[in-house]
View 1 (tube, rainbow, N blue to C red):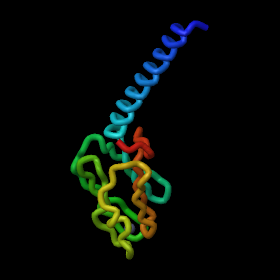
View 2: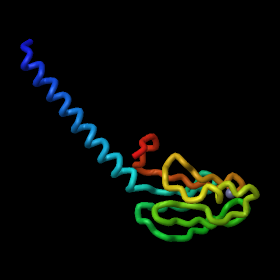
View 3: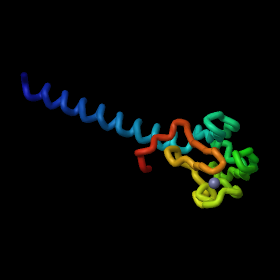
View 4: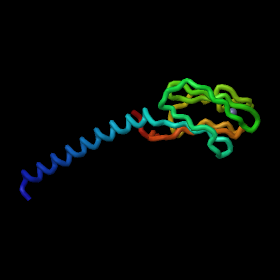
Length: 124
Ligand SMILES: [Zn+2]
């Protein structure tokens, strides 16, 4: 194989990799910011599906096993503001806007799972 052809092939391959890397980066950063959906579960049943990409300031009241949970969305994040559970773990989670970080209130059998096109392992 002549050297010039080999070099051209190499340049072509490197360019392709660069284009792929740039496309991937753009796609990932785009996806992280959009299409996030929070699903509120009570005992494995979805009771509420919230589109976080709307950035709504909204209150939700969900019936748990032992009482109501006051859930709030703000700037694409979701939090439990009030719950009657003894440890308040769900309240202490604060606002969450990433998938792979569910808010769980075991006492009330309520969990909030953020989902969508977010890819957990990529830090932008
Ligand atoms: Zn709780």
